[in-house]
Length: 202
Image (cartoon, rainbow, N blue to C red; front, side, top):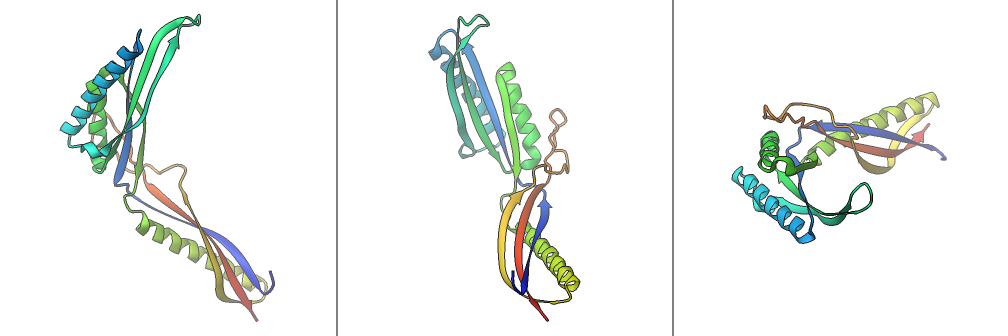
């Protein structure tokens, strides 16, 4: 590039998550498809009532998967049908995730499944701003060093391109309140990648 340089930099910032989502599932296997679906429906209603009794609102519940398939034994012979229903439970009280998870699983006994839990930030904009600031500071520091090595002065910024990302492995922070079901919330991290073009002077 004539009379200029381009640098890339990464900024990271994190905060305690204030939102969680749990995927709770129920399943049943019966000789007839209708019976399997009926049992899953009954278990789902029971799970919903338990969650509502703990303060979870119904509009925070969403069916994320409903499936039915034929089962076979090890010899390939028909072995009835299995039905499964998965509820995605959105929670704003992150500190009570362990309690609600334990209650939901206990209410269904062996028929309960947990298919994952996610933590996030309701509004990541403030954390993203911190990450962006750190990325730009790093970009400028790199540019100043490169300009000095080249015996030039660093001019103004002529272009900026931003790309967002997420941390692949959230850092553990604190256990949520539940003696029987400890859950690590981790840290919700925002990653900002900047590509910055500077002019060179002198």
